[in-house]
Image 1: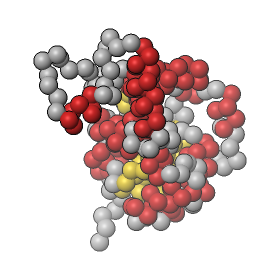
Image 2: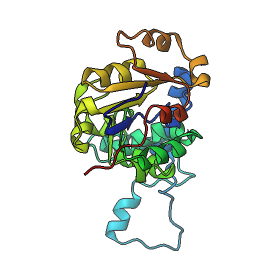
Image 3: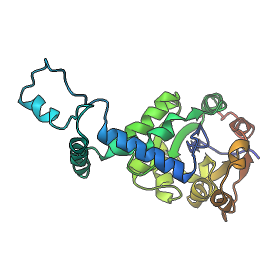
Image 4: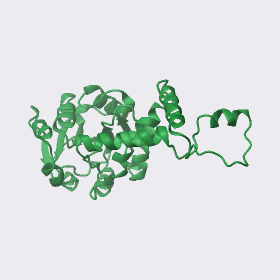
Length: 257
């Protein structure tokens, strides 16, 4: 099936372009707690200065919240509580969310077929966008760093992350915002993702054509909840097992003008 009249191709990130190994909820919660604990109680960037250092008033104020690695436990707990209270103002909350998500992003890897397919699709004249569900509270720079880490930046004119946009797929508004950013009508766009509910149901809801990618390894490891999601009421237009199969459905576009 050729995706005729397509101008724009939009992608999900996790599970489609990038593999984020997701452990069981207890393991993930434990890693999150460990990451946040590390940020609050023993942040590497807040080491006690040497005895020879003489701090002026601004530095002294900063050092009052910087525990020595050998400080008494009650003192370290008090400083940790101060940081928690400060975080409620929103000044450090994104950093705490980043600390929680760090174990997830650290183990990520780009799928081998991602860059070659993105390069081929862009060379065929299509415009590309990225719409990804990201954990609430995580800062934009965390995900933009992922984009740069995997050399995805040159391919996507529009990148939307739910933790920044404020709405998650399958909400129609996040898809529509991406389409508006590209200046392309939904009927002339296709969305590729691995989640039948968030990606396929959501994109179809705004009138986009849809492609469900079912990578063999991820399908075998799906939980019961994921299996239920595969029974979403809206079926994808196309099912694929690798991104390379997209090239059979997206021929080179005719030059404009």
